[in-house]
Image (cartoon, rainbow, N blue to C red):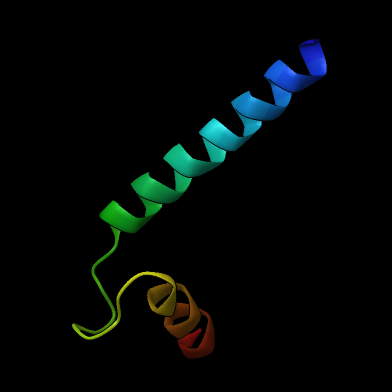
Length: 45
């Protein structure tokens, strides 16, 4: 029970962190959408 709640809390915190991270930085390219943005930032870095 508690493990399940901690697991859901961890997923929620990860999603919120990714959302804040995505909003805080400009988009690398206009045609990059969805998962492609993440791959482009990784390859550029």
